[in-house]
Image (cartoon, rainbow, N blue to C red):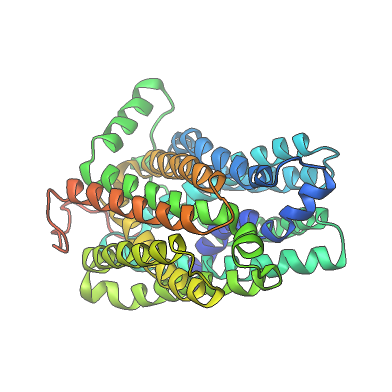
Length: 407
């Protein structure tokens, strides 16, 4: 498999989970009305239960991809994701829909653990950060397009057909994986499934100051992002009075994450992961502070929201891929377990933080923007701890890195 196809396939796999979140957003009000959901904020559960199960299941799949290989577990997850998408499409009650969404999250969590493990199998250092940034660029095309897809579906048919689209796209990606993706787990890195080995791999991951530091920083930043995603339809409808501009507005701010990933892929080899991501974190905090002040004083408008939210998302795009690469950098020999632990922490923790931010929505942008500032400051403190008080300083390449398995 050539480099461009490798990047696009990794991005497509990771994008399936993003599609499972963002394509649902335009349909949330219709789902709430269809099932007679009592409180508007309860519609956010359609997103939250997916995110929670998506994060929690990664802890289970990490040891499996280190034992049985990346490809078999990936195919298993894709198959069940398609199945549970059909269950969600046919759900007769809101409660059964939430169960189906939780099972979807469990199955699709394989597309977070396996691709990151595959990328770490094949690349390291700044090259790994470049691959992750390019994959993230393609990955972010989905949030740009997914709400439009969801909106198109509910204009032509029931929201249930959104889940039918999930099943079709998943089947196509599964065929691609089956035909083109080689197994990247090296025989010497196979780890048996026993309690001692699993605990040892988790111990190695948890004891990595840089690995867990950047994973925890990513967790709180995800919390701010998920807080916005959970309440995005309500933001446009209630806070901005622009429900008809939701699809366009969401696409605009998501496009800035994609642009940031492209910028990072072009510059990270020259400037380094720390310079790019630490600078973005400082700008993220400053921009969020300005946005919070505007929201609290009641001067928010659609224009100010789009400008400031776009800058915030651009910074997030610069941080996410680099934080993920730096978190995995010292853990190549336990990549599957590391990806699962870090994915569990970042997704479950981020989902919980995002849930509380989303549930605090009060018809204004104040809770979300205050959430951004708080999450940014906590992330800065964690990064300072991980880097022992130093920002922007490049680290030497770890010794003993395995050569890339793919070119």
